[in-house]
Length: 252
Image (cartoon, rainbow, N blue to C red):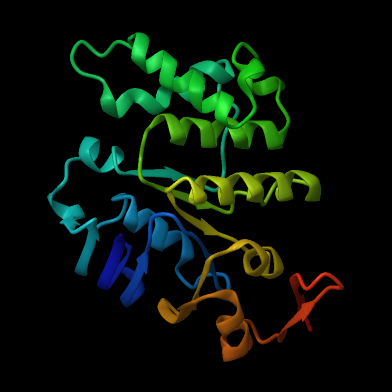
């Protein structure tokens, strides 16, 4: 479990998260939602060790994040930022970068590293892209390559900041299906999303932030019924069912 206990953090003198307590489990997909500036990206950066904890503790399966070296934390937590450049390398080379935290001196990729990177690409159905330059790939394919890089990192927790923001609807759904499958395989997936209905329809757990604090964290049905979405966004959210009994959500 990746756990925040009374955590405060921020940038310079500006505190963004205020005594926040929340937990993110392996084998579950957690979608973090909330209005702009509420601390969603700050939460991910703090969990990844990129921002210092001013108060409270972050633990990873019971071990304090503060006691880990960057390499140790990278072996447990993979973080994908909101914006990705298209680096001047092939997709296969990018995915292989996920092995960096596992390299020993001299830092050279070995046979096992290449096998793990190749398996990660095959797992996501993009094995044929290994030799393609990243700059030639669509936004959806690039995003899958970055997720394959996180898989090659062999981290238990994968944190993603707005992974669907630059994708069309078909690629958004494909990516969310991939993330659900990774959670089912035992990874702890934590994804910040702006799309409320997408978050509600795919998440095992929805975590709602507002003003740097936690409003509620629970299964989508409970979050929808709680009124937390209206409190955070000023809009309502209704749960409905289709003819086959499947749930869907409507912002109103």
